[in-house]
Image (tube, rainbow, N blue to C red; front, side, top):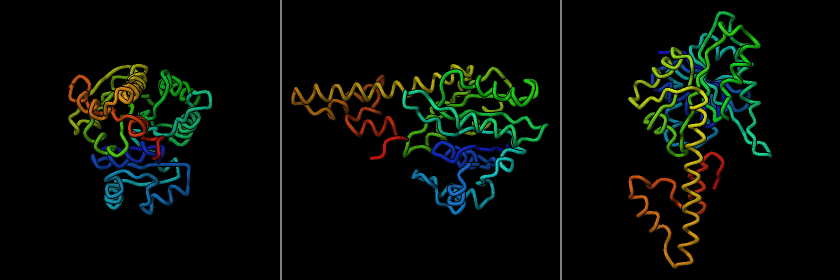
Length: 270
């Protein structure tokens, strides 16, 4: 069993915290929003996700899962700190990393001088972000005394998040620190999923490649929806048969708003 801090009580943070607690770890989730923390402590989760609330309540009763607004309470004594904060897009399409940078700095300020947990970036971030986090750590400690940084992107679908976490098709772990990467992999060992080891930049780009490919499938089927309409053909039948090809697969072939909801589950609210 490991002591794990999860920073951020959003979609990814709550699912990650509950799933890691289910796997037998001692987990403390921290968020700066005190009202949200109060609601979660009362078992009122801010997101709707199948099986998440019952799991959260069960692990909370067992004292393997806690919620707090106090950073030192969450990160001190931890073996791992999972960074699951939001990285919203800016008006020009750039990624806002202020929450991640703030979470990194506050984590370092909250740790005891001799503590060196592994920092695991779970948020979706641009290529090179792990190096940015490492640079922030260097402002607090010499590199030899700084926590190692590992990129571990999430691949969660709304409505299937716990299933995706606990039965993943792959687990991507990016770091140049082999020992840190191995220790993160051990957290996922009970899941018996394929583990992909790479450097942090590769892990970060894999996440974007996955998102982009799924968005491409949606764009493709929407183009065919227009063609189907002009030919008096039902596009849902076309997509159904297309999805029977194992090289294509049926996922993300819903035309129109159904496809958008599947491709962008965390921002689309029907």
